[in-house]
Amino acid sequence: MIGEDVLYLSVAELAPKIRSRKLSPVELTEAYLDRIGRLGPKLNAFATVTPDVAREQARAAEREIAKDRYRGPLHGIPYGAKDLLATAGIKTGWGAKATKDQMFDKDATVVRKLREAGAILLGKLAMVEFAGCLGYRFADASISGPGRNPWDPERWTGGSSSGSGAAVASALVGFAVGTETWGSILCPSAFCGITGLRPTYGRVSRAGGMVGAYTFDKIGPLARSAEDCRLILQAIAGPDPDDASAADEPVRLDGGRLDPSRIRGALIPLDFKKTKGAEPEVKSRFDQAVADLRGAGLTLTETSLPEFPASEMASVHIKAEALSTFENFYKSGGVWDLKDPYAPYQQEITRALNGADLVKAWRMRAVLQEKMTDFYARYDVIVTPNFMSVAPSIHEDLNKSLPYADPVGAVGNSCGLPSIALPCGFGKGGMPVGFQIMGSPFEESTLLGLGALYQSRTRFHRERPPLNA
Image 1 (spheres, rainbow, N blue to C red):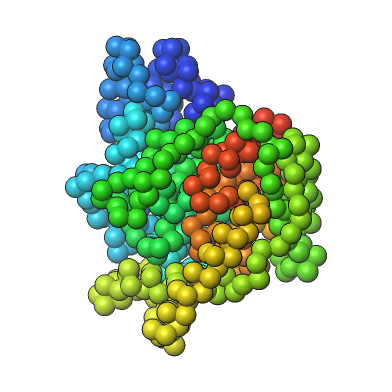
Image 2: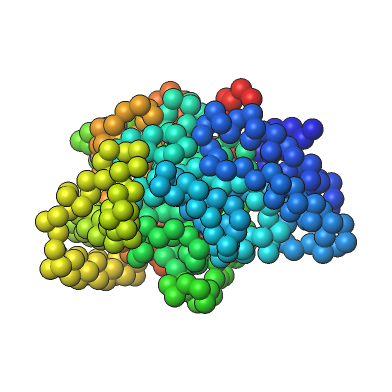
């Protein structure tokens, strides 16, 4: 049986072994399925495991590779897809009781592209109900139960891609595909000590994915390294006739090393001393990451984001779009089947929101985008903390355990900007700490290059949680 040392290898490390036939996709798949059977239920990582599909795809990959029909670096690599991505003939439950048995007859575009790249689907990964777009206060807001963190199962993995974070961190999959409306890739990446990439809005087709907030939703990889994220994004990015929002911007993800001295970095520090819930250990790890980046040759100038009520404006947009998306569940009463007691009252909470407010929010969003265009005329990337504390308990009210704002996340998601989450050490209770690097639209290559450079000088992305399988 293939051991843990192999299952924790990155895609970039597994691929040449598979291509040279030193590693069997069938045996690798069986090893992941065995581990899923032992650890998956303890972590609430999977909504649905698909062993028959995985074995069939693994055998097909092995046959093709034996005949020298190698498709590329994802060929023969087992992965998991967030359970809001449609998979033909396989349940796609959106994390909610009302939709737990729904099934589609066509794969989401990203699932199809990964199949065409030769990746092997191990199953559908657990998620917060309706991707948290109606709001939630508790980690238990999922039909799969709370996402349990492999570093401490009594702590949260982060949402809404909760299963994606747990599955990658515990080596249940070679990589995962998650989604982000606001924080749902970067959050589980930070809390689980893995690498996640939120691509530019429109970089990856969302056809066949659950709509949460249409002008905010994005699909991206969660993996072991920045290089893995590059390989995955290369396979799933690009235009799609089934998604009008999918950009036809060329996908240039140069895998070569970049020259950090040519990059203008903006350091956006957060006020750890005056912020409720912020932990000094997290600041210490972030400060060391900044020192490491500077040591690698990146120039970082401390500055601040444009003054703007981005969080308030983004919240108005997301609430309005989500209420429109899930309107039928309010009409049918299905919203009362949601586990979190907060979500069913969103209509009452936002009743005062009117058309004039939405028009103002759209105008404000355009102004913010103009301000960020000006900002990125002076800087190429932003370096900033991801979260200001480590993963909270699964038993606490998240509004109390994560009481601070996310100004960079509000700006980044409102403007559709790409960002990479990178692990940078450990804080309280030995829990992972991460930071992020955010770029201008369609500049994922720069973020991936900086991430790879940072990870060539550190080993935090290779650390493993102390799991007892």
